[in-house]
Image 1 (cartoon, rainbow, N blue to C red):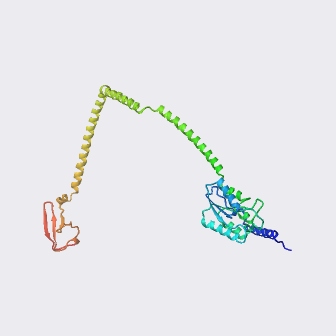
Image 2: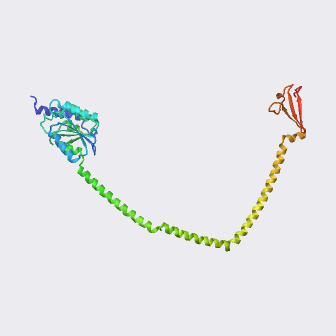
Image 3: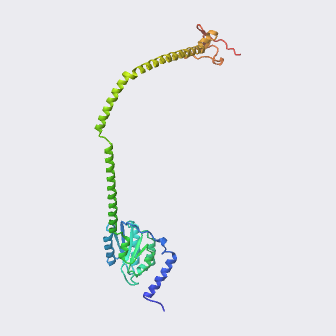
Length: 325
């Protein structure tokens, strides 16, 4: 005897469930986190089913800011598995969905057979987009529910999980707005008190100028009186002393510089090449232009003209012989 109908489908369901569980496809490590604020929600469901309308109503009520893309598929029948897999692949290629909802209404185990298909299960696992399943009623459980990133008991519940509540968002926004306004009010009062304190401490610029002008006139008069009476004789004597010290310093510097100048002149005179000519030396040059001083015999050839400078004049000579030591 073999089971038929729901019994046979239940047996195939349990066998596939155990096999995929052994492979680790149900493990939490494969579950992708759901986005907190999805901007684009994709729905894979029947275009004519009540589940789609329930999902759209929940999204419109809770989170109308999100855009929605519908991927119409068959949710039962022999072609349903291929259409669901193709819809998952298309959503992956579009890469504009932040989250996907895979849903259908309730039905018998045979009606839900497309969501117990191994190909559909593996397509859900490999899809890079987080997937929420809302298949059937709360008591219905499919293989797709086990491999999905989150299971919802109904399509409406799947829409609620996928979308944040705009009412809670508005409440949080209003609370933040109230805190911000309160903080701004405190800052405004604090800055106002600081401004009043500064205004009390600071005088008007015109009063400041008038006061400073009067103070300047008083100081000018006092300075003139002090110069005439108390300090004039003292500074006059001090000026004479400084003048005397400056003259003495200038004479001393001039004497020292004159001595150094005489010493430098004597040194320069002693180093003058023409001064050595008075001691019997001579300077020998060739007659080229410009003339070059000759230091060695190698620079002179017989038959060349040379010029010899003595202390009292010059000699033009012709070289006949070169005698080396």
